[in-house]
Length: 367
Image (cartoon, rainbow, N blue to C red; front, side):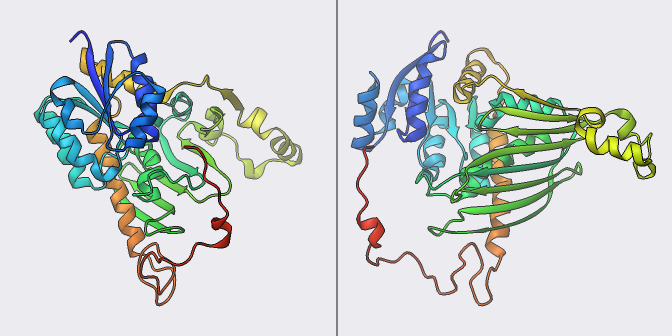
């Protein structure tokens, strides 16, 4: 295959990014962008010289591969049609909104010899890859992924929207299967959870604490990994990695810190992260993770390269997310309230009350 003919299906926030980056991938020809929205079509045409269609089915016999960036609820039906027509597919995360559909897509891709990838871009984050090399075997992972309310992906809750990234990372860092899940979450704006916290335990003994919010006044993306030979913390916004090496004389308990004399105690207090547990800080050169993801997918299609984000891995991430959501749905925040993320006992669904005064004065912004 000399040139890979690719379409982008869905021209929302991520679809536009995929459409802009795909022409930069060697061996790729961007055939068209498909989206039923006239506004989305207009915006694409203003940004790129590319064919735009309203129905992706018009492209089936004209493409070899497609990037699917529609709302999650449409992923399964569209992807099934693509895969059954032997079209390689990259699906934005999450692959679907339930594990059964996700595993069905992975199986369908295998049956039709298609390369199915899922948009878990953190797998291509160089800061995370650097941090993972510094800790030995990971044993405890803590992740915080917080943002304001962007109005993107509000058809799903924060577990599928944001936490899914860290679920996927934990799944690949721990050697083993999930054996225990504890979680809670609550809704701020709608019926889905906007904040969530989960504690996951794996058969290898690894434990992860994951926190996600899309209603936070302090945006943050942080990952901390504690392993058998050290610690690494990543600021995913700045690409900064702080790591601590644990010398063998510390890990093997060759010195009894509890019996240290006065001078030794003072030395430990003053030089803990310079002489006892040496700390390093490194900044990683920024990289375009979505472009790297596209390149990995295309190489797997064209030359049989190893695919980093497989459909099966995406399905396992959804399976774990589903267990977290089950726990959230079983939690009762207030006596007398219903189970789940809603904290108002008498809440029966969205209302049609008058617009609050501070929203009445809101002025429209350009798209």
